[in-house]
Amino acid sequence: MRQLALDIGLATAPDFDSFIALSNEAAVQALLGLKPGGAPIYLWGPSGSGKTHLLQALQARAQRERQAVAWFDAAHADPPPVERGVQWLLMDQAELWSPAQQQMAFSAFVHASALGAAVVAAGRFPPVDLPIREDIRSRLGWGLVLSLWPLGESDLRHALQGEASRRGLRLGDEVLDYALKRLSRDLKSLTGLLDRFDRYALQHQRPLTVPLLRQMLDEEP
Image (cartoon, rainbow, N blue to C red; front, side, top):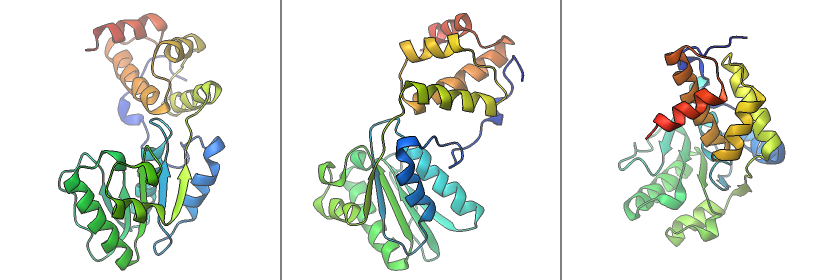
């Protein structure tokens, strides 16, 4: 196992194998069993619970199987249309959709359902609590609604060590201690930190240590 970081391009895209399920196993199994034509699924949970990871894992699996996917989230002001032949509609960040995006999401949901596409959506809140139109809330809530929960500290350690191992990185306990005590404790943020730390260590040709992590954080805006 290498001491110094290599190219960040070695990092893997989100998939089901890299998702630490634990208490979220029921949600993972429901998604793995979903096929086009099945009832819609809505995932909800706080930031860092893995919603986007699971949607991206579905997208990657569908693309490997040469199934057409339409993706929609709050960052897309003008998402691609759900055309004939689309087998998956994946929608993220439901709580952030603008009024115009809510109309687009409603139309996409109706069209995808008519085509027999599988629909999976995600947001921070359960459908009844989403700050969006009632007609969209009702559609997001009529299928299977599953909650996701963030990992505890021991699980975060396991997940980060797994991510580091996949990249060929040696991540010491002292680095993990520093990150978990002083930085955001959700997996998405910590994985992003690992990405940046990998690049920084490669740039400086130094091993992953607490002093180097402090130096990187001091230099970041």
